[in-house]
Length: 230
Image: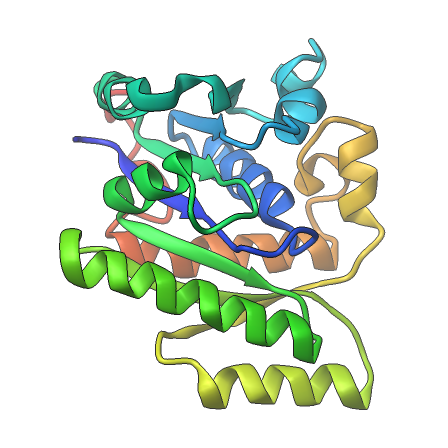
């Protein structure tokens, strides 16, 4: 495979997988890369918000398409996509034992696990990381795994949850954190990236910082070299 593949994964619903996948896709699209989001969740939220609206194609520069239907053909689809794309993000369903998740973990260069700052979310996310690590150790030794704190807000208990994640995680917890900001639901309503709303906002800066860390993990330039082939 030539494209880099990122599986955005967690077993818990509501962790922000779809938002992280879409905003990273849009950010790398803005940086000049050819990006595809494979929506593997039967709810097809990413497809509804960013894949079906004409205006979304101008406001989020990436292709978003439903692929939960692919079943056993998913590896073949990913192989075909990797020949035409430079980055593929897999928006995984919130479940551990499923065919789309297993295929995603086998194909991924990076498994990115969004973690909301609550004790329950931390414990559930750590279990997801352990599950991904077992697949890595058995079948995909080059895969990287990383946690990202998502929907962060002020408060003693939220801060303690982040401390617990950083102290208990066996895989890296990224320095970047994504805050609980109004720009993210607004980007859903307007079918866009947060940069399209305001490129100087805190939300945009946080997503850009996350994209920089992700790029370093998977060996992707922060920006596409000028004049390079798409």
